[in-house]
Amino acid sequence: MRFHAAVITISDKGSRGEREDTSGPLLAQGLESLGATVIERRILPDEPEQITETLRELADGGDVDLIVTTGGTGAAPRDVTPEATLRAIDREMPGIAELIRWQGYQHTPRAVLSRGVAGLRGPCLIINLAGSRGAVADGIAILKPVLAHALQMAQGVDLEHGGGAHDHA
Image (cartoon, rainbow, N blue to C red):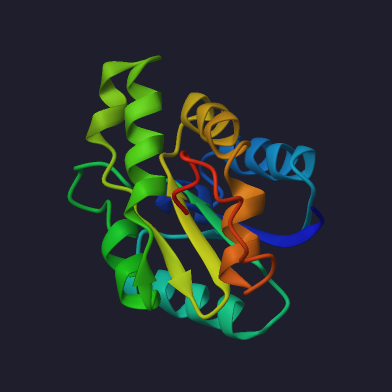
């Protein structure tokens, strides 16, 4: 499935040019491997209003099917990405965030410390990943088997279920 995506790195130091963004390019590359055309890449500071407004702007613009953020999901005082995302979305998709934490835990127990969320703003799916390269690589691998169907559902495409005993979505 081909789709348009936006990648947003949330980092105070990255937004000021004090630290190279390594997770954002890795995330863009990973999404492209899943069929995305990444049409937008931004680096934002850990400012909740700016994050929320950017998510709303990109989702409401109609050009982006998926927004994935990297960074700002931990417990540090300036980690506000989940709260900013919750203000931007209409409906949560908690299973995606739960899957990312659960599967991430298989690689590092610290994955459970991510407070990332996932949800929909209109037909646009928004997903938070932690800011490390490892978290991004794990996130791409975790999303691979479910992302296409999640995007189709969000856009109202191919909503017929297979009727199998294990088809729950």
